[in-house]
Length: 93
Image (spheres, rainbow, N blue to C red):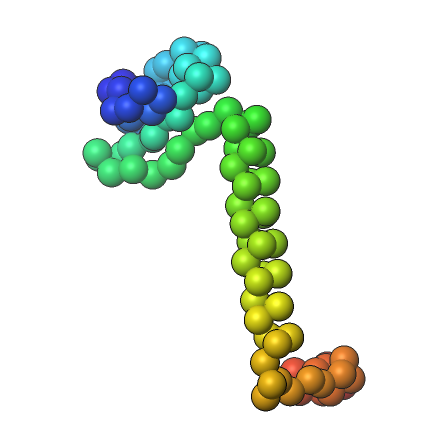
């Protein structure tokens, strides 16, 4: 186990298998980067931290999509089609 930052540790898969209980405790406080043959293959994070990251990503996506929608709505050359036309174009009707 190698600490690379204050809140991040690198851990090989083989070492992980031997130390699962200790790693699960450590995971509550910091991220664990799993490696195989010295190449990163995954990250273990506490579930609460994962939920926070997902919420942040979703909020950013909503903001970006909202901005794009406003931008499209202000275009003068915008073409609007109704639901039936859209379904027809993609082969649903």
